[in-house]
Length: 229
Length: 204
Image (cartoon, rainbow over all chains, first blue to last red):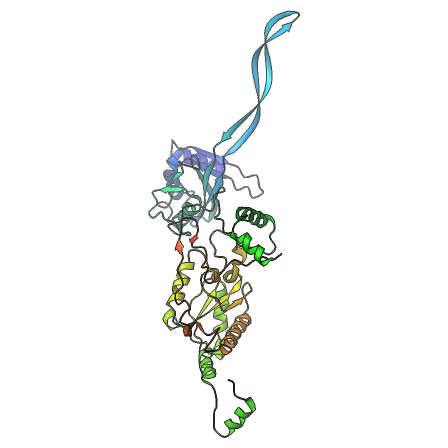
């Protein structure tokens, strides 16, 4: 099979305006992946499926990843003009100062597709797409028209991450009920306060138990405990 | 009022059978518990194994798994009850005719098991319907399910038909229908039925 760089070149030759980037995987498996832009995703996917050398006719897996907003602290060298006394005379001198700056890199949702070729017996080729942010621009093109097996998996990504797939034939929740409002696999998902009791809470559960108890301080449950005690 | 056992055997030799209505009634109830044909997860595989030739649940009068809740006496909650499935389980239980019993089979059905702190799994079916026998295990072996059947039969056998602790269908005051939870925006509403379940009190 072609290397990712060759596939990237082939895509760029076939779909001229497509933006493709290679995301290297430093692990021993070295499964490098291709980041494709949402705008040309469908035509790139059609090329990957229909190209005679690649013939990626089977989508085995689609999944989502949540990247939170990242605050990056960095030191930047800034050159400033500072008045200074040089040999008893006041002059304006260039001075290089290190300045700590913070910037926020917006988070995004990423959708990963694993492609194989049954005809050519090769794969996987991994393609990724990213949303613009994780609040209001969470739309991505659906690849269900290209690979039918994406249908349920894209519904699952929609259900658990809240990525909206444009062009999906039947985009409904698949695991949670239709009335459910949250997206449980998002990293900022807040669970309902459904802690009941745990005989020996520890770690995460202990944290939840303490939060729950502090919320219940002075309420009827405490009164009941006093009566029992 | 029980009949003296030795006297009973002696009378039996003469072709006379002496019993009480309660004994006869309970014998009938416990010897023909028909379960509902209904499985939720991997515990259902053990339940199926229990009914097959090797473990042979038919020995306990429970060989007929009924595909309709109208004809079933026993609901075996065999597996994980997800929050999406819980209203359907309660609805099926409501459709069963009295007398009806519930066995919660396996760690998930009794407490949520390994999925207890998850967002989509109920922390035990006893939050919505009354459970007669709980079986721990993941999954419980067929012997454990048979043990649960025997426990249930013993429980039925020991019930008095009048007074405190009589079967629910002989009690005018007892609830016949259990409220089906609604799908809420964040969780099931209500998250438990206070009539059947309350938070255990921790005494320190």
